[in-house]
Amino acid sequence: MKLNQSLVLIRVDKPKEQDDSGVFIQEEWVTNQPLGTVEAVADNVKFCKVGDRVWFERYTAITHPQDENLKMCREDAVLGILDA
Image 1: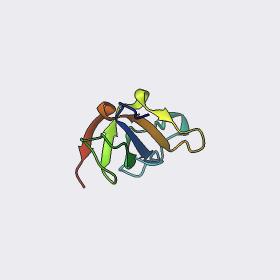
Image 2: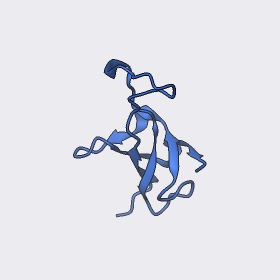
Image 3: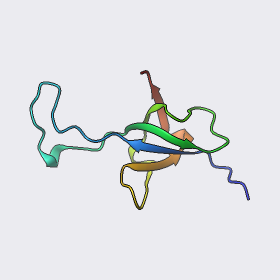
Image 4: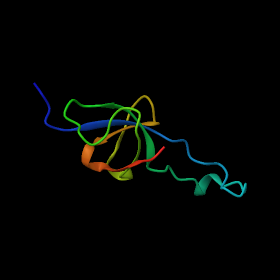
């Protein structure tokens, strides 16, 4: 059985503990940024490839049960590829 969905597995970046000026951010204010690196893609994904840094929709991604830094989402939930 072959899936019609174009799925992408993303390793999410760790949240920042300091801002750019060096001020520490309180733990309550730290949010998980919807940025990460593509770890794997399904066969029918056309938009991104393994190793791309991407920006994705935060609430459409599903968290991996054994690793909270891994997220899976559909290809259309990837909003853009960031330049290196």
